[in-house]
Length: 173
Image (cartoon, rainbow, N blue to C red; front, top):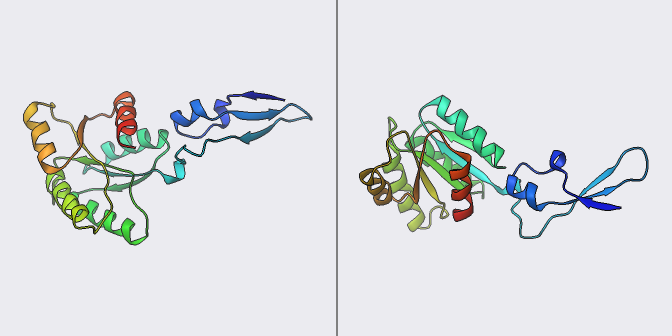
């Protein structure tokens, strides 16, 4: 009987891969794997991310990166679509753990969508959720200011980088 980390059978989240040992029974023809988890770990089934972007390629890239981090993904193509998805989740007695919001989109941009989401949160219509700006623009001070004024917690540049995303996940979740 031994305890060992087993990356092949670990959960999707790299944080959980590092913190989830497996108990391996070496008796018999094939080992038995049993997950030992801490009660403080967030289960990947609990992590739900809304990714809002009008570009299907950007949605695919962001979705892949977030799925690698253990998130389930719902996507929206505009700010208006994002508002509908958030309300739908609330009606299902579910909520997003994180919203990644593109800033420049047709129909309703990310700034306006974030302002409306923050109003709904303030009025108790929906649960509080971290909103992170996604931008292809150079992240200058003026852009950061616009994002903060709209109610976004911080800004990530596209394409998403796993290191920066991990920092966001640690900070807000």
